[in-house]
Amino acid sequence: MKILVCVKQVPDMESKFKIDSSSKWYDQSDLVYKINEYDEYAAEEAVRLKEKVSGSELTVLSIGPERVKDAIRKVLAMGADKGIHILDNEEHLKDPFQKASAIAEYAKSENFDIIFTGLQSQDRGSAQLAPLLAGMLNYSFVSTVVAFENKEGYVEVARELEGGLRAKVKVKLPAVVACQLGLNTPRYPTLPNIMKAKRKELKTVNIEELLKVEPLIETEKVYFPERKAGGIVLEGKADEMADELIKILKEKTQVVK
Amino acid sequence: MKALLIGESKQGKIEDSTYELVGFAKQFGMESAMFIVAKSDSQIAYDGKVYLADSDKYKEYNPDAHKKLIEEAINKENPDYIIFSHSSYGWDMAFRVAADLKVAPISEVVDYKDGTFVVPCCNSKFRREVKPKTDKAVLTLQGGAFNPVIEGTPQVETLDIGDVEPSVEFIDYEVQEKTGVDLTKAEVIVSVGRGVGKKENIEFEKELAETLGGELGASRPVVDAEWLDQSHQVGTTGQTVAPKLYIACGISGAIQHLAGMKKSGFVVAINKDKDAPIGEVADVFVVADVNEFVPILTKKLKSA
Ligand SMILES: Cc1cc2nc3c(=O)[nH]c(=O)nc-3n(C[C@H](O)[C@H](O)[C@H](O)COP(=O)(O)OP(=O)(O)OC[C@H]3O[C@@H](n4cnc5c(N)ncnc54)[C@H](O)[C@@H]3O)c2cc1C
Image (tube, rainbow over all chains, first blue to last red):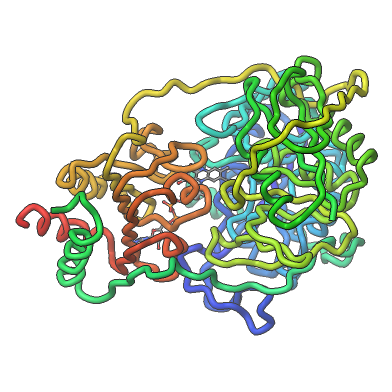
């Protein structure tokens, strides 16, 4: 089987974010980056599938500046065979349609049987890339996948719906599979595998070679939302804040007397 | 502006979120029509035209057929906006349609003004204002962002496009049995997030919950990591709760979590990151290390 997994590198969501000078995105300096959480599940599932089906080859792809090679290397250390880095220093200014079309441009001649992605990224959070990619490649598509099983010539998955309901679904190949949190338990790469990953093939392609479309949406601005009106912020010593909080709870709720 | 609203039915029932789509169109003075795959005798409370495809024939989930049916309704209506819920159905269907028609896809809309859409980003730390660059746009609306409108009697037109060869086939629903705690009846919920760091630390929140006579809730990563079982999960894929007091410990306040708890009477957030989006719903935001603060709070409550 030929398998592709697409991963995105995103800032640690606990970072101190600032808006950049264009007001169109967050300031990318001084941030700690890691693999998008949803994509870790995608990577793990891709590696498991590769290990199960002998003769498979797993490629990991990421779009972004030089630093996204770290994300690619991590997935190589998890067990992917080779990496594709689509170099784009302005990745953050592209919309999902453009990114999907760049990946589609790369993937169309590769004839992957299955493409794994995360359901959404933690920063943009649009959940658009996978369905757009599937549409462009004319692949089957399934999202919110929380269970995955490879069968003869098709895959069987469980989709997570709302309120504790799941749907069992049969998906023809080739397919794009968008993975939801909790699908599996992503492995930690071992030290020997991290070392081995350094010797695996990692090819860089420039975004200009693959991107042929204009964006469909335009970001006007990015800003911090307002806090709850009248919300109280307590800062300082834990001991004093606890006293203050208990006082407020006594006044405002009936549960603390 | 004209909108085509894509309703949803699940297990034979029209989803409540469908009426939020109607509310959105009404709120912004858009003309609208609805498309839905549902039982042919469904009662839909909507004052307008409904294109209905029979779910006995087309199943509640059959993306290839649904896409074709939706495109048929688009041809008939020529809407400016094609509007879905930001739900498991919506984000599965919406962007297939966008890819097909090459129109701007906009996810998780929470507000709208003069052709500009407001959407969250970075786990709702920020808001982003986006504009479609195409005449039409495909939108998904965030659950709970718009008030539902449930009224009227529709003019129903049945849609049938013959058989469609499916690439994705629905087999069956799996209902997860409900065991464990029922958070919906709790007056106090102390909820644990990933910020507590490790499973052992949950003891602190457990003791606080016991002291307040409440139950233990959790965010999804805590359940995914198996620190607590699924019955504790609050949010869109967990329980929807409305206790008198909700204490969020080390929870960032992602939209999917807020959706499950924002109707709580009084919300306390304990978080070391002052910018955490839980601040949007917190009545009191305690900027602190949860593992340090919670034991102190519990001790004081006990001796009070
Ligand atoms: C379709 C879908 C459905 C989902 N359903 C749900 C759902 O039902 N419920 C749900 O909860 N999520 C759900 N999610 C996931 C959701 O998007 C978030 O990923 C999740 O809520 C984050 O959980 P968290 O706040 O515990 O973790 P994080 O977002 O990782 O936040 C941890 C927080 O802890 C703080 N922190 C860290 N260390 C400390 C410390 N020592 N002291 C104090 N604070 C600290 C950080 O500042 C941060 O704000 C869903 C996602 C999707 C896509």
